Image 1 (cartoon, helix red, strand yellow):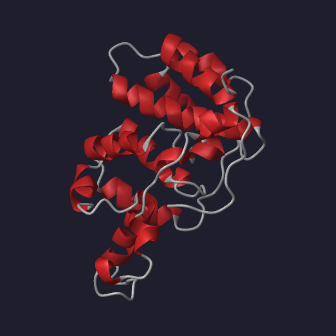
Image 2: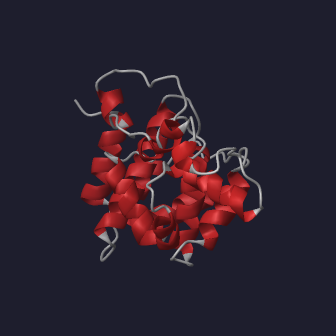
Length: 211
């Protein structure tokens, strides 16, 4: 049986998509909406807050990507939430490196920055099925960051390292990553199951924070 998030994803991509929209972009945004909607249903945060958007921005996103599914958000709590810790710096860094300077890019940056605040691997917190989808997103919309992450560091770790380096500050004491005692925390495997699939199978999320 599908989880609620998976059902929302199916409705968005099956009936609501904008004519001529890019299929990959439709997929990744539908995943992000689905995971945020699943959290909203669980009482974690309203949909807009889970996406890091204002209510009118959620409606703008639906009009841009899923105009045929705009009724899905009718009656939902669209209370926004103020930026969380470090979120403003994340937004600035992502926006500076975003290929798309239009509405889509602006909304994408805000969503990714907000989802970075969740406790799992970033690909899981974006609702993706695997890390490969996150790599594809970065290569397409943040190519400069994708090119700089040559060692395939975990994306949350890489984002914060990029922010620190831009201010001349370093969180690391090791001279190079290969000499660090905590190497696995930054470069270890990001295996796991899609959160939407985990919810479908009635398994709770692991309590520890991941990158």
